[in-house]
Image (cartoon, rainbow, N blue to C red; front, side):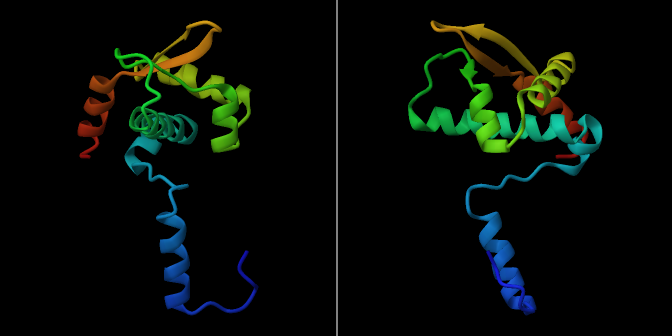
Length: 127
């Protein structure tokens, strides 16, 4: 943790750049924040990023776009409790931006991003 010393603009820029490029950050389109709300937009971006990471890791079990992301994983990575997760996921399903179902043995929460609808919304926002 940085000390309470006065930071020069150069030191501050280096700190921010380091934080933003550390792999623990992702950006969310401000138009999407306004359209979906903070919780839903952050969850959507998290799931898009998580899907990409799972696919790249070779742990992608299904070839039909479904992947699992447990309550514990989301809580660990985002610091968000189950109740908030359920609320955001429900909203994203109502907006037809993702699908959700329990799948596999033992059953795990699987998600599929509706890429056509996500792309449409982002295009409408000028992204």
